[in-house]
Image (cartoon, rainbow over all chains, first blue to last red; front, side, top):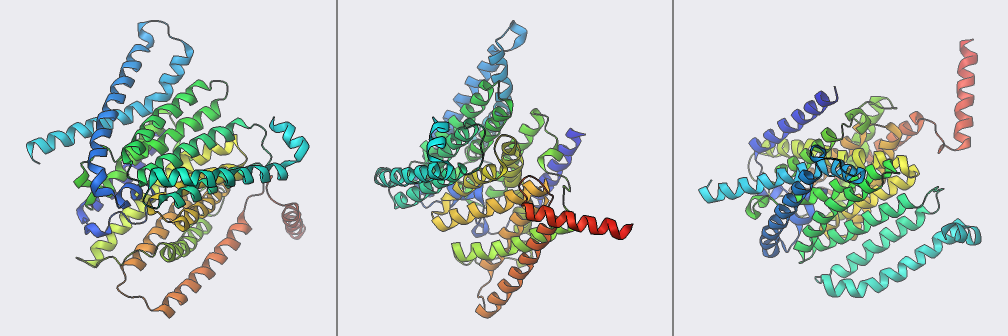
Length: 118
Length: 374
């Protein structure tokens, strides 16, 4: 039931996203009055600072992602007994590792797309 | 130490001391921040530091059993403030690095707090607040400037929340996707009327440049509607109200939890570089937080948030606005918002925070009804 509700919620969101993509409003309309979309998009230093900052952040994000995956592998209980604190941290990090892995694959996807010229 | 100062000075004096101390720290920080951040961000930074300090100082006025949840939330808020200031400055990379570090460190702290699981969960959820800023990182810079950039950003943020909910096995009902404790009609009316009023207020605060009317107006309106009503308001409300405020109410007095999440919501508006906008977002965060707490539902906050954004867009896209018409529209909206406040008050569930007069009044009403039925 919990998973089904999440699936419904994701479906509503996904459908709205696709509709927004299909409508594709003029660029001037994007970036106004949103909390999470404002700071970087709205900043005046966007053009000068954003490109190198994003490039470096992609590198740091990828390194962090690899380090976390190594930790998850090392603290896997199938290799033997692990400390309870390591298990707790492992459980707490799990959603964030999933998020970082997804972001990592997006970085790779966009890189491949730019190389093959999509 | 705190209990000693409380015994000697009393809670109000204690808060006043913290507030005065914060003002001094804020003024001293001004000089440091203005030299480091540059571009006139020093004043905004000092204002934000003061706002955060005053918020936490006033938290001492409420009965708090344990100080460490408040201290943990203060740490989260200060980290968020630093991150947002850096993201708004030319030191953008440091802002991203803080976001990355906080995404890892706060859940780590949460994991270490095995004796205090509710606080551990809140700290873990705050990791999402920082992770939301990392949603920018995978996209090529040119992608962020086009109109599909913003929906894509929100899709990533929403998916982050869904992954968290899925892994932590959180029920969407506890998150706020339910009708809750108040009639649905009241929630819808409150969301619509207060939302429209907030949109008008935000328009006057931000005074955004007029949006050029390019292309089909209906198509543009539909884009804004889907973007603001679903993508933006769903993501932000799930994150701030559902995932952070909901569990925070379990570890802090409700008003303090609302205040803390509202200041975090306000700080995430720092990108506008307008102190009035930060203050406005803080106030709106309080209203939406209060609605969420009282209704135990995300319906009213999502509607209020979405309608507010759409109203501002609508006003900004009008080629010219007749002043008297705008005043008339504002007056009608204000009257409906007042009616909504009355309805909310009337249907408000009773709890420890209701005044004794209100409780007595309701009891008399119930007694009268009982007598009538007899």
